[in-house]
Image 1: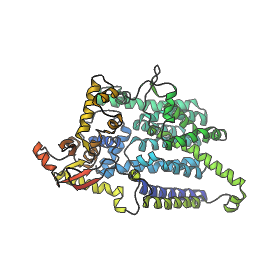
Image 2: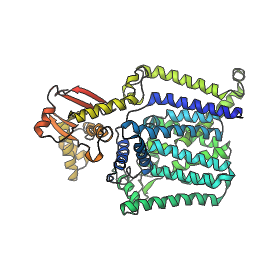
Image 3: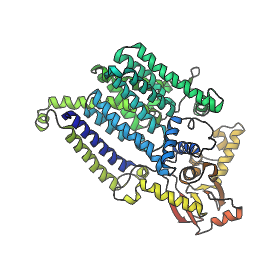
Image 4: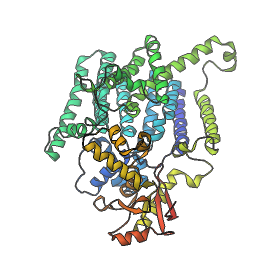
Length: 543
């Protein structure tokens, strides 16, 4: 028979799944048009159609993400909604693992607090339904660490757990190369648990064998034994923002982040020592990987003299260690609550010494749900937040349903020779300014000198975004159109009045035929840019 603890464990997991469903209902997002998710999905489509693969770069070489996406396409097809399967499946697994790790290292409360904090992270809301490395690599890292905890507790399956943990960590590395920064921390955890150097060597050997296998596969298909290295460095190491900096500017990676990341990160740094000081070996194991990862990120440089960073200063690069950061905060919160309970006679009268965790967290989830209903059902949030939540009073406009309605609209327009147009307004004068600036810069002028020659203000120039018109159209043609990647339509441009129209349409048209598409009142479908939408409208020459 099941023990009370086992029954409570199942009830907590069921409660967690309900919490995830509610969370996903509110925070479900449309396919991101920023570029990365589009590129991963499109790369997988090349494998699906068995056509020549696109050029290897830092994204298309991440087969740890691309192959699972391709596998989902193989089973369910290439409808845009299929892109939701892998990230959401991994998200559910991730939340369960975070909870179970919290239980293992301390208590169910630590598990639930960690899960709640993780879900509230803005980048998790943004990427939780997207085909991006963070959606797959993060869960794999957490699963790898969970197996290390099992390695500690089960002496009969040590090598099995180490092998599986190493495999998942390498898979995470194949999803995003930054995950390898967790390897030193995991090796220290292995030594912390059993002080067995042979086990650490075995773990490293598994990773090295997998690395040799990956290298041989890349060499077989490309003839370049350093193919993945060249794919990564060919992009990341050549960005203009990678310029010589001082030693202290390395710390800008953490001091110049957005406020929503900076505050919890500073809290984490403050709590590290007190949590470590009072912790046992299991809690110490959750602290080590995060500290090692953040140190590796801090000193990731491609040159020492002068110091040149090897990675862009982006918060998203830090997400792989986010669980290890949040566990420290959750442990402190749990310890603080217990301390206050012991010191407060009032709390002791109101709450039992060992409360029913299921009832407590049911109440917390119910409260969060009610608050969310109130916030998301009203206009309390600014308009720019609309891509990140769904209004429960407008079910027909839920973003999950839009995947299907937009798929029908875009493909219907494409087959009917109706132009699909970017809604970004790009004026002829802006294009001329941008082109002239690039011309002067190619002649050796810097940006300020080029703008002075043209008599253009820097602020105005920065408002010109020549790549914006193509973003939404790339999402349409690479994701939503049901066409072979070899046959996707090119993005066309046409000057209408004082603006340049960016659009896609099926077939080849003469200039005269193209102009006939954009007369006053003609039918078009707008593909919006900030959040992808399909809007059927009559064309206006002067919008």
